[in-house]
Picture 1 (spheres, helix red, strand yellow):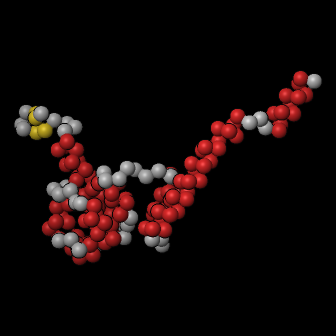
Picture 2 (cartoon, one colour):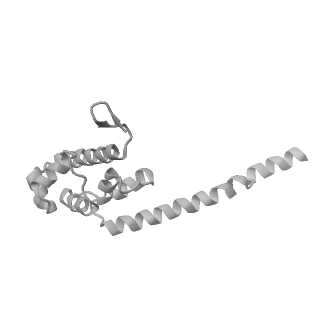
Length: 150
């Protein structure tokens, strides 16, 4: 469905793809500016042509996962962060601990994933144990109940 002027209606699949492309392009530009790297430098580091990288940053092109990985390496950031921005991956869970692990430049992607897996397994284990612990009477509660009934 189009609106007057030939524009796609809001929420159309084509509009969503354009929004994702624009968002990822803007995110890459911000990361590049934060790293104080020129467009030309990043294109060399990532092995992507300068015009293509420019089109990605302007939201004209939506890069593949492989291109995003190359750009992430050039920016020295997590490919996962770019995948989330591009809509390829869902927003990761884990809160500040997960964010800190993902942001640590000293760890390899494999090491980060192993740490995240262990951390999430502990969280699931604790969440599963929580209902049982909440329903069990505590020693203080049991003693108080016994005194009242005596």
